[in-house]
Image 1 (cartoon, helix red, strand yellow):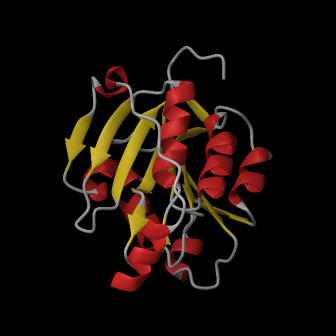
Image 2: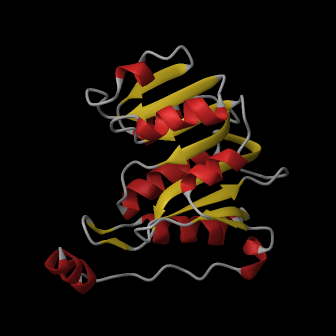
Length: 194
């Protein structure tokens, strides 16, 4: 574990841009991602990118009670059948950015992004998801961190920080995690050219 962390740190690294204080002015800090989900709109259309076994999708179904929960993953074979068989669930098999691209603009109240953690993968998901979220809706990113001692370097922090620097979406929620892999929720402005 320590060796993997040292190797990841030794890789050439491009720094994330600084986050403008103005984007943090109305940010609420929460204890965990479950508390963050409690703050998001209920009963709407929700997306989750990266489902794995479906534990978090199950939490979203129980807590947010979405009218539709769109799940994006390359493989649902490990996903709990209680989740995949839920009447509100719509599954999109394949690369998340490709699956999002074919959906209508301004469709989602919020999208939880926990898929490909590489810089390039998060950038693709950001580009695809930004037009799919309604004005006033949210993009929520899991593992807003540079490194995970178990899995190595992540691109989430850099990709999201660059998105914030360009798009200027305010950060509304920041959620802690016991492993230092935080969640961040950004809100699409009500008036936008995107």
